[in-house]
Image 1 (tube, rainbow, N blue to C red):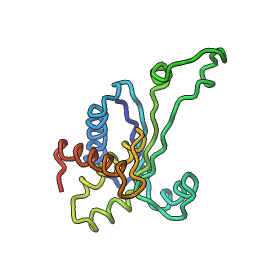
Image 2: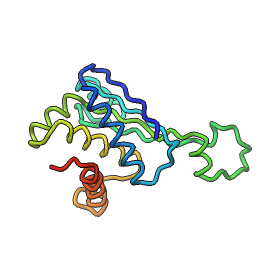
Image 3: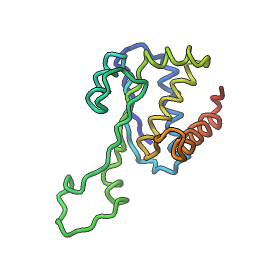
Image 4: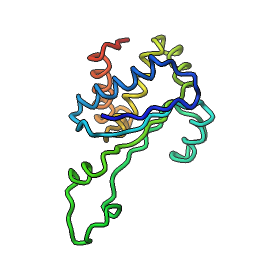
Length: 164
């Protein structure tokens, strides 16, 4: 999987950037995504996270990770209206699946609050956002979707070697 990584804050260590790339590729393999899949990850501060959260989620506060899923649109490819294009073909033509915005400030706060390493927190946020982009959700709280998503997230992190 191709991942474009940008650190708008210039605060993220190179090791974390590399780890983010590796764990997202690891998660992509676990989900069976095609190697041609593409996504973007941007590390931001709380001010930018707040802006994005307000813009995309109508929530007036910063958050730890924002996932923006991208689905290709048949109209972008100028096909005849009567053509029924299989989703797999659209995905091959446009392999971009979405983008993540990870708050550096929130990652540092939460690593301290939860008493684990900063490496684990960044990985947790990346995998969490990645799963959202790939159709997983944790609402309603306490529901089967939450158990499935958090179970898969923990399975990926543990298999990667980032345990609590």
